[in-house]
Amino acid sequence: MRQIWSEERKFQIWLEIEILACEAMAELGQIPRKDATEIRKRARFSIPEIAEIEKRTNHDVIAFLENVAESVGPAARWIHQGLTSSDILDTALAVQLTESARILSEDVKKLRMTVADRARRFKMTPMIGRSHGIHAEPITFGLKLALMFDEFGRVEERLRQTLERIRIGKLSGAVGTHAHVDPAIERAVCEKLGLKPATISTQIVQRDRHAEFVAILAVIASSVDRWATEFRHLQRTEVLEVEELFSEGQKGSSAMPHKRNPITSERLSGLARVIRGNAVVALENVALWHERDISHSSAERIILPDSCTLLDYMLVKLREIVEGLQVYPERMETNLAMTKGPRACILASRSCSRSRTRARSGRARMKRCNVPRRRPGRATGLSWRMLKRNRKLRRDFPRAKSTAFARSMFTFNMSMQHSKRSAWIKSTIDRESQLPDWIEK
Image (cartoon, rainbow, N blue to C red; front, side, top):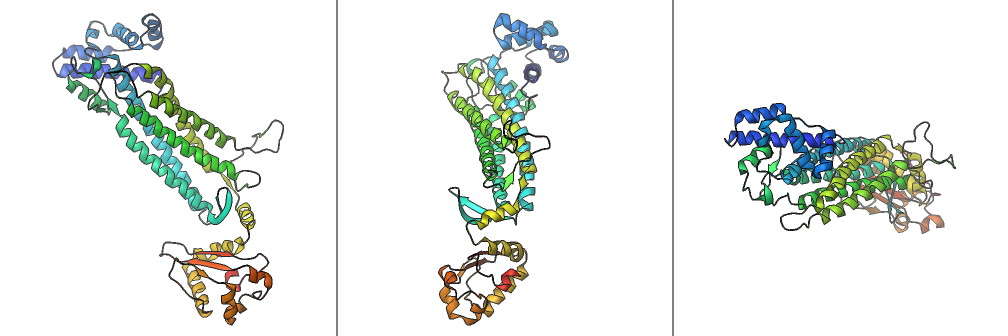
């Protein structure tokens, strides 16, 4: 990514655009073929020399053209014929953004592969789900990671969509009228660069395209921030269900040696704010004067390379966090126990949900106890009143007659889905109450 936005790469693209334009003109008979061949053969540039020339001209494109002309000789008179500076700048920018988007897409694919591996590993690891930051219902850590996998699937889709709208080049000359450059030249150059020619343009490619691109990057950065924040919360001392990898020799604090801080996740949250701020600047660049001004140019030289480079870094770092994440199932069980009743859920999720046979035996047991059965996916509740009426069922709950147990309802939820789905049992029971033998088994 750094190479894409380097001065070297920028001038390489500029030179290629100028050479391709000359070759297209030669194909149309507008300039001699031998001169186009000479330009391709001899054209060179020197970054230090361009910088020196720009001190005098105060114009980067003119400085570049003067430097290239020195290496070409007389045939250089055809270079840049009929074109304007923004033809080169905006077309080169489209190439850079296209290359950057492809790198980001690869980053997202690698991230999703890592998340998928971890989600499968922890798909049966129970933990408490939280809403408003408060314990709600049991979930699994694999389910949480599956949500992350799905979210970054939408990231891939957004990148594909915005790539089609950002890979737009233009060689239409001053104010976009094609008065001095044939549209066939624009089509030929864009095709060889892997771009699409603008349907219509002014002296620049319209900046709504670039604003959308940076806004998409800001949304992606916010998704990274969302999961960095999630892992930061789960690493808090009083939660500590997962933890960033703390490598050998790493230090947490100059004053408190016991500290193991989620510094990488915090770094990602901070960088996401930078990209979201850049999106505001990109939106401000949409409103330009008439056929163009260059108030967008100075801002884009910062926000576009910075946003692409930062997001590339963030996606790589998030993948490293997920890959090295330390997961503590025992702590998840302890936190489940804080709001009572998780033991039956844990035992059942370890046993019954892995085997349809065990799920069938559970239903058979319920049938022998005359427990009313409902359609799969519907809850079957066992209240104190039902226990009181059913002697056989009451034998499976030795403490059913106790006042303490009578005050707390034992609720049994079972749902059995299709063959490739898991059977789930969720139970809530007083910790002092004895579990029935068939659940213990």
